[in-house]
Length: 166
Image (cartoon, rainbow, N blue to C red; front, top):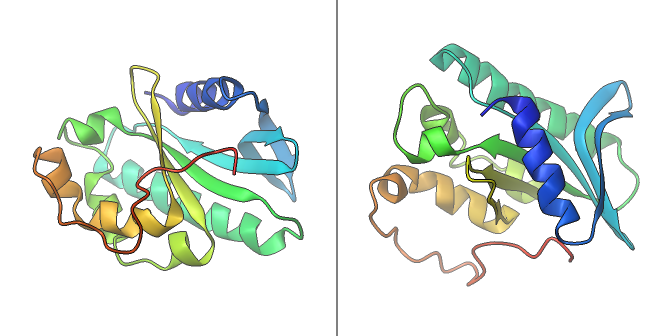
């Protein structure tokens, strides 16, 4: 799934929940893939698609994390931040994929400290919202999840996925 497809699926996902969503929004000399709002709830999302080589997967994800950190540091308003990731190839265990780079971030403070959601975008058009408090647990046990095994229970919260309207 290419970045543009991830962006369109993410936009449609927000719209299905009655958000107003716009793609390619300029913000502080950067481009936000999807900006969505409903009432007082606002989201800024960076979309990244599949790549040709392991190095490109690494650069894509590292770049998205660096960009979302930059966005988070410049905002003076409450907003949900997210990285929307093409996930089907990773989930199926195919290589190359985001699998290795995601494991690298399993102990990162970025997701929790900046409250960054990880949106898993699948080829079938579904989107799964991994809330910030669950991202590291998910990434830590990604190999087991891909292998179809149940990871140990995460005691931090019982919510695995988020409600985007909050």
